[in-house]
Length: 171
Figure: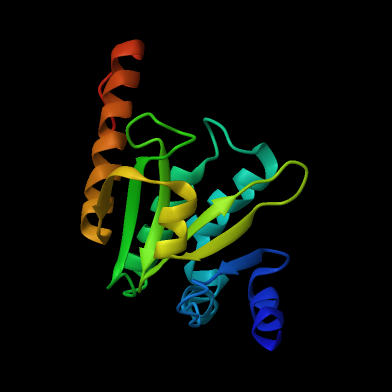
């Protein structure tokens, strides 16, 4: 309970829900790492979460933004070692790379938006996550691979915009 109060001080009303493996209970390190980094070093991640809060799951605010922005913030803070951005299909989202989450030290974390209500961060033991979500065709990216994928996506978007506007893309 004291840890939850400390996290609330750092992140306002952002809630963490932790689902340990009942057969192997252990403390989840993710909330502590995020608390240690603080809101100042997690701006992209928190911005993506607040977009999710405002818009709900959809094209402009989604699990991909939340997970990838956390990876970039971790990299920029020098704390990305051991973290991975995972994408894959799930039983409820069967398209390739339809869902994103992050993984660290045997735990997963993803943003969950329930209607009605604010988003929360669900941290699951990786075995519990696998049982609940049933992920398949999972692709894991470290911080360097995350940055490369996001840069390539940005370049594709700029080229498409330039073709539409018949202008030179920003460099």
